[in-house]
Length: 367
Image (cartoon, rainbow, N blue to C red; front, top):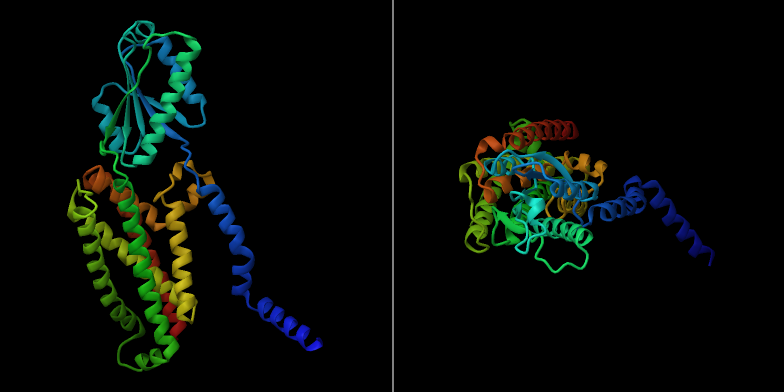
């Protein structure tokens, strides 16, 4: 029995001495609980709404006050004309616009009811449904409070869905799937390929060649960049012809943004390869550290706006968030390049930083 406890103690020593194992065992559960606890939510919060009303109206103000007082909506601004709606949606300034008809207060008590329109940005179909459901419930509660037991028609909101009138969920998921697939495949391919060279000892053989280490790394990445471009083409073809998600905007701009994103993913794979020495660890690093944040924190499934502020700030550091935003604007909303310059600049800066850090760290590791 004494020998048994000696082996148990030895295993404890192995775990305590391995800092990476200790981090995985102790820190990972905390991180996962926090991420899943706060990010996994289908509730909508911080929905920015605009108001279109032709004249000051008491009933309109009461409804807006109720919307603004809720935890879901924020009355952002008043619009001057219906032409402003599309511009505000394109600039991602508003999520929904509420348009009130003329003489709204008077017509609320008419048999025909008052005219009210909910215009929603439906690029995210599930969120658009939640917006309209929550707003309609608040309006219905207002009407019940004002006219308890009344049998009149009252207020019946007319819902208008922009950019995705059929409410196809694929319009929302395809950009996210593109971001996740390209990130995982590109980073995984690069990290595993380079770690394999170190595992088999062939990296040292490559280093005795006339080429500089940085040229060797670039030469190894070019084939994976080419394969990634083929993957991008395959994903686009499947999205367009199988999932029936059209590219409403510029295909050239979409490809350029995707190529920048591929470079970022390859650089992340190179960075992972400098941190580990085994293929299985490289696979776990690339999968867990890239897949989980992409799914939870980048707006692929759950709205970033509904998360706590600290997670929203953290999501700004993740390349998939900006790529998914750019793809949605180009593919679904059909916006011109001038509306995605912010995402392009951020992705370019991230690409330059990651390439510089990865190459320097890898070069230092080789030397």
